[in-house]
Length: 302
Image (tube, rainbow, N blue to C red; front, side, top):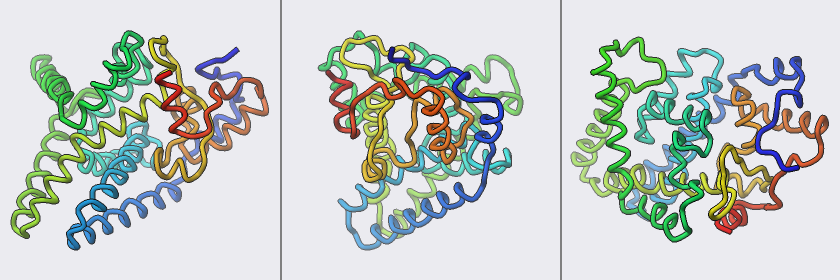
């Protein structure tokens, strides 16, 4: 039997209490890495190293997306207010309003590989490989953003027409989150113009609008598409990859099946959770023989 989600019986209540415990130190290390890479990007821009800047920037945005992911789940730091402030800070860099990203991601958990999942445009079993390729490459040419902006507009319109106060909206879009991002990117644009570095502003915005969605679409296939024309509903590929593979292709994100089964366990506690799960239920924990992200990508298209 190959299963897609684990049930609660594989972890005892005492295990869950221990695994749900949040520690701030691991997250502060990740914030330090974030700031170091940000400084490196500034130095690369000052040196006019366009290609290297774009490569590091794409990795940086992907890394920041995963930091934001932890903030969406409120498991990045123990204080919820600080967690949300950091989440909104990270959101500025990836160009996704915090509340909107949180709303979409929770839809991903609630309806994994279903119509409400934003990743369904890639995991839909009715898509041929040619259609899927067109959608993935469409990210590089901004072809998919019309739908994204329409969703964003519908969310804003929904907030207004429902006559709810912005303050009381839980997972729906908060207009303030959008305004913060717009103001930041406008300020960044004016700064780049002032220092005669508009090229790097254009590259940054292209990375945010095209390269990050492109990379994230590939990650969606690796993590959640069972195979070409195969029903992937509730499917999460569970396989092990090397440390180098994690650093290059999936920074700060492994143990994906565990995460979907126990989303409130912080990333740094998932290795321990995996050891406990394998001990309690050693058979069929891994549902793929892939040993790297590239082979998993090929499996998703097979």
